[in-house]
Length: 260
Image (cartoon, rainbow, N blue to C red; front, side, top):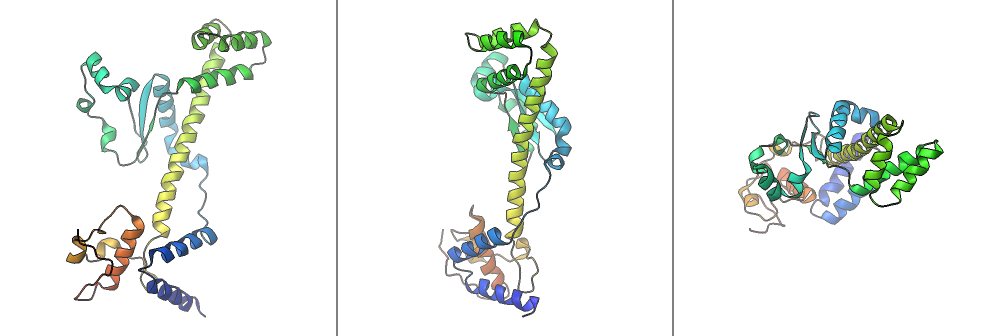
């Protein structure tokens, strides 16, 4: 069989089971697992546009601020962590309410937030820095500080009065940058996965042309149906397929219709 004939046969089979969501899902899963190999984008390319933003995020986190990153424009916006934890207490202390501050990120379509490190995360940085030291004298002092009361204050006192003060700042900065990069990569890959899923699950006509959902008429019967524009991509696709098949018919029919 020629390529077009094979494609026509596949489309014919799909059309015959378009009302069977279970079978369609089985086919989709099989195709994704057996044939689809998404191109892996190098992590350095993913992060390229966010290099300046990453440094700003680290500064904000280290200052106790929550930082928002616009994934589309790489803009950042931050505010005190206390405002997020206890808005009422923040308003009582500053006279400013959460609603009255008009944050830009509320208007962003794609964003991710970064909160200050938790105590256990900060402790882990101190521990890893201590483990990296070759100077046994300062290393033992820091280990002792971390294993007794007030580890943060005692660690800071020792570092501030040692020749390793700048080493500590550099280590902490690099650690936090790596932390932000890891979080950002996970978020970006998740976004890419959503886009890829939407793309490979697109709807095509019998000639292999991709169908723009916005061009498919919506019959009045659909408007009063429980399944119309539900928060279920697969359900919406099945509805789209049915509407597309009958787009030129004067009498629209749907076996799955349920009135609102």
